Length: 200
Image (cartoon, rainbow, N blue to C red; front, side, top):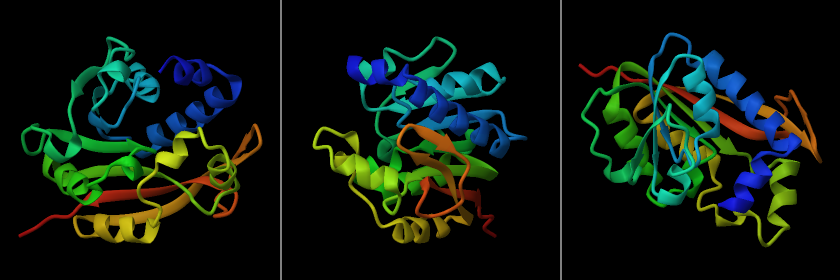
């Protein structure tokens, strides 16, 4: 965790987090109560809180949650078994976390359950086609090598069972340079945006 926090403070990761936060702020307009799944030390979540959102961070790591700021409500547990009541949140976000969750299909189902009618889902996925991803997987110590799911089309299909979806690529990374890109080879993230389907 110390190494991770140290790397988060580098200029490169600060630029990445700022770009991600700016994107999320645009997408979450009109929402208030946010659940962030796999929030870790809640760096982006702290930024959301500063912009007036009520943020709940969920993570299985006590060590990570201990680093989260006091402005975030933190809950230790797994998304597959979370015990929030139905319709508790306006939005659920996953910032590069869902691909590391073994039972991600259950995670998506639970996300739909805790969202209010018309609630938003925002999932940032690491893009396996990107230069950033390919470069990281060359390093045996990289966290990306712990990834469990790289079939983005399958993840999107699962999300579409519960949500109306839109997908786009975002955030070009080349070396330490961070830039705007919608190109699937240059963009480090594939973002799936969902609106909870209305039934009946």
